[in-house]
Image (cartoon, rainbow, N blue to C red; front, side):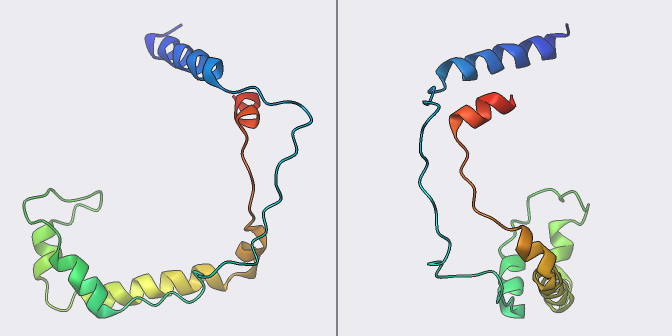
Length: 118
């Protein structure tokens, strides 16, 4: 058994020990999703919002996983235009698929369920 595996087992044993054991006949509340006030279906991203976020990037930070330095993101003229189009197309494409909407659901996760899946 490796040291990492041993640590994982110790943490797992601890978390299982502090879980509340719920009764078998516990009735969970039914959640209704019909009173949602906002939706991600009509997200609109503006060039001004993107430009504002780019200008708020801290210049002394290192580049992210894309290896694009903050200096480039902040100083390339009109970079917010193509970025806005990419973000908006991404959101439109994601939410246009009805199969994604059919897979969305509300679910409760009980501590017992977590313990059983571990």
